[in-house]
Length: 443
Image (cartoon, rainbow, N blue to C red; front, side, top):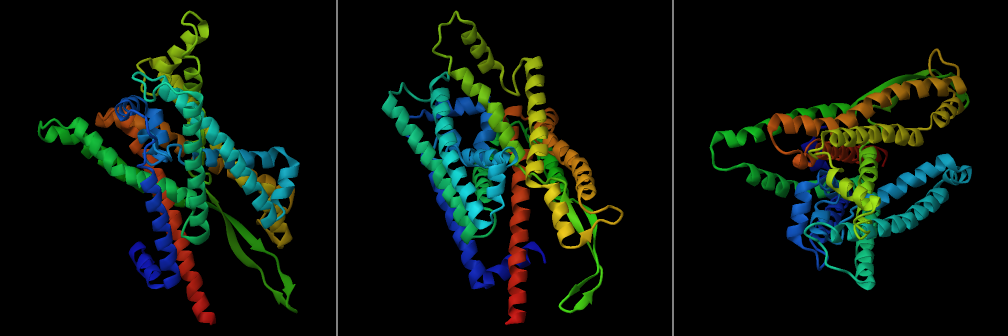
């Protein structure tokens, strides 16, 4: 079933049509709020800052352009995603939380409620960091704020993140696809044309065909990377599974062969988002010391950090350090997120419980050890792929096409998110169609 046919069939069914319309309506409301700016921010100063900071451009990518406009949804889903990752980490550290997670629907709701509380705390902290950052840019984006004005901005930005969190949960429950992923997807799609137009206007001078060569090169690279991303997103390592002969319903059920799919990119784009949040932390911390005495060492260190903590800095050693850390964080978070979302011990126990086994591997701990070894090798390929997309590809594309590195956040990361979310949403849509076909046969 191809993409167009799946959409046509879905629109013909009233239930799926309502889900699609509901999802589209929520995303339109999100795009509306992304253009509602917080009063008092200088849009000219914002444009200057985002033209010089590639990392802020990546954060802006996940907020759908809300951060570059300093809108009410400027922080996007980042606090919620970070809160979710922290809670997943706690399931590894705390046995009590791990037991709550295994309590079924009630346990899931408790952990989700704690994630919401943590989202509020992280959102408020990040909002405060942005007020400090935007007050200490040159030229200043925000004017001098008293405590009440700062509190107003923090409350507005935190409420914007909570609203997006609610939108994502509504889409997941009543719409089509994963709500959080679709909101990020809609932000990239909504921001894309404006970003491409801005880059195009900045690099065309009416000089003829030569002006269009970088964009042709960039388009070809984007096309090739789209094909590669589709292949990697769909790539799986199939572990053969054999079901033992057993008695069911008074009769013997014979052996059945199947496979356990291990996705190459099991973590998706979550490691990238988490790595960006960590990499942005030094910039926020450096801005806390702008009011310190100029002759102190921490003021000088913060001033140096503000000028050099950027992938496009002229300081070659700092640029290598920055990009190296960015790659390592993305690589490490890929392993971390895969480890906490794919429990090899639980998978091995489930296989044993249902009288299934991997040919040549004993059930129980040997199966868990085998799955861990295979998953480590598969995750290595996925981690290298994410590191290549986020770090190496923008640098290489900038060198080949001549488009500055600051504008490369429109490249590999955006394509990865758009393609990944589109594929996952279409798979879910096709699953819904198949379920309704079987329901028609039964009834």
